[in-house]
Image (tube, helix red, strand yellow):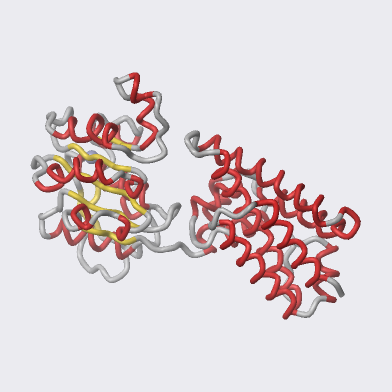
Length: 372
Ligand SMILES: [Zn+2]
């Protein structure tokens, strides 16, 4: 195990290694990039290097492009490394909005943790910063979803970002640095993370999930737009089952009618939304359903993309015979129009429209395009 295990983030590695090389590690970082590409894993590994009591230097091998010198890494064997590898390091703190449920004040505990508020940031971060590290070297605070920090929380944190104790390091994980207050951003070094190659995602899925079939791994990777964490979620949620439900729906839409089909799709969205809620207890029912529908729209556009591939002779085993037959008969232009219709419906979804109407009009549009 090595910090270089975080793959395809060479730019981020170079920024960090340059800081080690110059022996001027900034005390506050913003790790910015899409979810599920390794920002948090990188933060944990960096925290491990920072707290390691016997860091090593080794050649990067082919693990890091455009880097000729050695790489500073954790040793993996010291007391500090042992506890951080077990995720129980007393000096590596993870701060997240769900900590509100552990706040000492019962009134605050009752609130929903939809944002990372000032109470959580004050209690679990600012007040801890001044305390001495338990194991001697340094303290690292990893702030998850820091882009949900309220302006009040960000303002409260400014002084800490400005003058952190010499042994304290902060890593703020965000999707985009641009959504942070300029005062926060200017006090941190921004490290950007990029998307991962689909082949890498497929391999990692297969390595992490014994029971995944090669087809499902490929399908989950294809729909994840470069985000391993998203691909894994698609697998955990058994999304591929919803693809066959959509197959069914297409086959029976004529008889069942648009209203009934829309209802079924919305029920599926609710079921998917509940899985989102299991992971994130603080999102509302409406938001959960919206996320569920977004996921279904993604599956539907993947289904159409598969039709296009069929059209040009590529074979995808995840596509059913029925859609294969349809693909043979449907002009590619109709397929691309359908993909655009799905994208338009997804945009509408963000505008607080009536969900039933939005889905119905999409289905009307799609069934018209499918008429041969
Ligand atoms: Zn160590």
